Image (tube, rainbow, N blue to C red; front, side, top):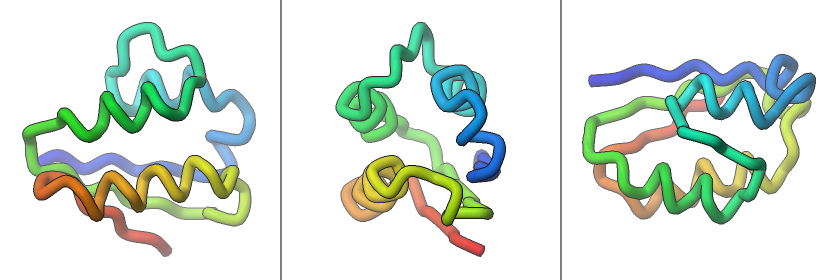
Length: 79
């Protein structure tokens, strides 16, 4: 099982490189649809833990929740 911690305060500073590093996403360009397509293809049990959601863009938060609803491998926890 893989655990990924997302801090809304850190993602706000440089979202493209932060997401690229978190998910080992090759050449992420900030396209939210590409992020969804990348995450939905993950076939390893993964828990994404998010803190400081108020600092994140609502669109990113919605995409992460959508992926967790559609994928049997990804779950999202929010503090």
